[in-house]
Image 1 (cartoon, rainbow, N blue to C red):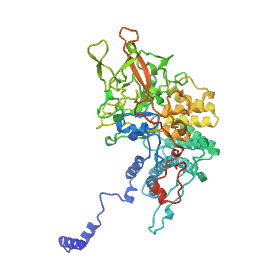
Image 2: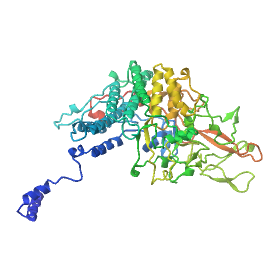
Image 3: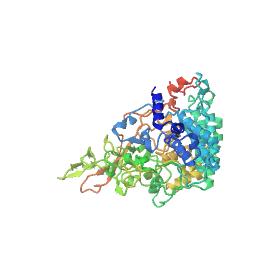
Image 4: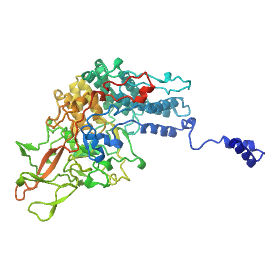
Length: 629
């Protein structure tokens, strides 16, 4: 009735003469707040806007917007009360790291379908858009397979005809190897349609496709080879698990793809500060000015999209936002993973024959190490934004049986023996046990930290990009693949190139290239870049390193399968012994933050995440992942 009244009133208002054309015009008026499909696919700028939304949805577990996840396992301690559970959790839920985002896959498939039918676009635009969609689809399936194992390969948009029968929408899981084969071939197809332009960083290019192909093939090869060490982590028909016989096949693909990027001479290692290699490594991640190493990024160009990584992780003493900062405290476990310049591994020297080793300067203990150490971690004695950090745990009194005088708040003051006025007895950055934002391990993170004034203000934030692929990984992918194929000369060549940039100038001989060195060089190079966790899974080392047992760091670093289940720190103390030669020198103590109350245990069922229960209930053709009873 209301509709009828509307038309009657409309006719009266408009009058009878010529009203039909007016009514038709009114009722058929095109909407101005939505775009129809044919409108979108006739304008390349609108298509690009649609494509940008697909780039924004690239799935990632650890990145600048999700830096809390870097405090999982043994890389960093979470210096925030609400996150101590990360170091008090022994087991990991089988749902962790889960991804079953077929809405995203369908959106990409729809984009591919529309692009191929878009006859109003210039052919060069169509080809590039298709290449980008293929690149994103390959990456989406790569993320699915590395988390879930074999998944249904759906390359069309499924349509339900509402006849009550949904069987046509239910698909079984494809074998894990088949999914990797698709990912590899799809990156190839994408590469053929993408520009060969290294100046493009935030969109897919030929170089990005080849580099990602190398990564995907390396994952498949590792699972094929090292999956033999975890035979129960498999399902019938290869749904989970890849035959060992395919390992060399995938290693060769990884090596070939990496060498195509290397031989193109389009990219190179970042070396703008050759006289300060620690600064050089740190600047690699924040320098957006024609950076020759960066291949593919998630960029933050718009102020409304600035990320908060620097806000959340800046040192307390230098904070631009007093309410936050200092979240990621890199562990001593990680710090000791960086080699000495003589190509040996070893712990930092804190004692000798039962006595403290004394250092003139607080940073001396870290000298003679891989430059990536200081480029990744803010150490005692480091600077940020041109100012020195204030990391020290208190005074040690040799004359009083090495008793300690310290404080429970940043920069706290107390009266020292023999004095009448208070003196500062602990750093303005800590370390102070269980005080959030303090450097509870003795360290802050440096990688990805933006020194630009204002980047640490929550209202401003930073536009430092998240690097998804860089040239150093291409070199290390090639080195690992060559090593596994028995080509140690080639492995040494590529490995030494990356190590030289880190100050390790004594080249490794081919016989010195070992699996352990491959593992530790990737850990040193890619810490906090979203690589370490997946590397440990593909090598089937996760259940061995995070085995649930307590550890005390007595195992020398450099052994790939050495357990590392609890996070430790290294605290500097000033010697207070007036009138003695050691007064003002430094000693160090290995500590375990008291919030660390459990040893991490990665179970065999964690190698592949659990398929969501609602997905299993809706599709009887699926089978659940193994070892998750």
